[in-house]
Amino acid sequence: MKVIILGALGMLGYDLSKELTNNGITVIPISRQDCDISKKEAIYNMIESQGDIDYVINCAAYTKVDLAESEQELATIINGEAVDHMLKACNKKQIPFVQLSTDYVFDGTNKDNAYVETDPCKPINAYGYSKWLGEQYCLNSTNDYYIFRVQWLYGNNGNNFIKTMKQLMNDKQELSIVADQWGSPTSTVSLARYITHVLIKKPAYGIYHCTDNGVTTWYEFAKEIGKQIGYAGLIKPVQSEAFSRPAKRPKNGRLNCQKLVTSTKLKLENWQEMVTQYLDKNKMKEN
Ligand SMILES: NC(=O)c1ccc[n+]([C@@H]2O[C@H](COP(=O)([O-])OP(=O)(O)OC[C@H]3O[C@@H](n4cnc5c(N)ncnc54)[C@H](OP(=O)(O)O)[C@@H]3O)[C@@H](O)[C@H]2O)c1
Image 1: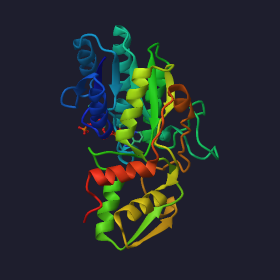
Image 2: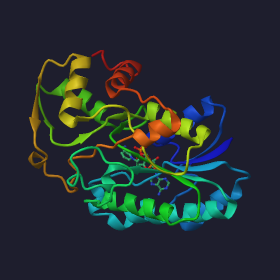
Image 3: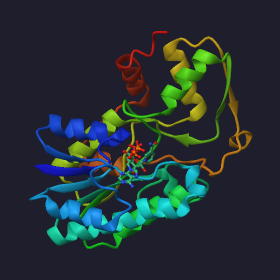
Image 4: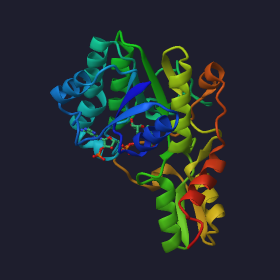
């Protein structure tokens, strides 16, 4: 099997490239330097210039959630229109397409439990809208596609919540963390394994919710990190409204992954265990 990964140097792209390679799959890693996806011709040229390809996997994205409020046009070009061009280039060569999406396609208010793939979308910020648009291009394409909706990612190759908490816990004796947003912390190492499994197993094309197992709040996530690294300070729960941020966040971002589990027989990792692995691997339990 041979795949193209766009965004290969991003947090997920990096770990996914590694996992696919470890499974004997040939990866053509594409970074922003190789192909700026805000430029339509660059996308067509890059995909057309490769020989036979089994999947094009798009891990590239505009991911600055707050900045997207003031850079909506750019976010829409990168997360929306670029996906349309990728799909058209893939269609020409009949290459299945893989897109990464987010729980931010939901508003987080119209459901008490976890969202399933068929629930109606209603993004509440510019980033969420741009990712929803990317999904729409897939849905309206004749191409075969997988969309993986993921959330709360952390990985070795990028900034993430665990690194931020570790830094804050080194510097401060008291932290206030949001306790009214729900989701599943997800390691890019386990996510890379889930995606690789799907690409090999080939269940029906479509949308799949895909996270580590278990749900929590940012507050409980921070407490778990604190517990594991031996933080002696105080972690206080606060409401989202305590932080004024440009982009609103959905409060309920829980994603039901049953479709993925049933159709692929995947065993999802518990999020706390993946946090342990991450902290151990990065020697973050030491001062
Ligand atoms: N991180 C999360 O918690 C989270 C949650 C839900 C969904 N997702 C989705 O998961 C996917 C992977 O996210 P991630 O966290 O791995 O993101 P990331 O670390 O920000 O990586 C995104 C990659 O896209 C590249 N990129 C941005 N603009 C580009 C352009 N114009 N041309 C070419 N490359 C460009 C970036 O390159 P530069 O570094 O050069 O900018 C970066 O390598 C994305 O689709 C994201 O929307 C992530």
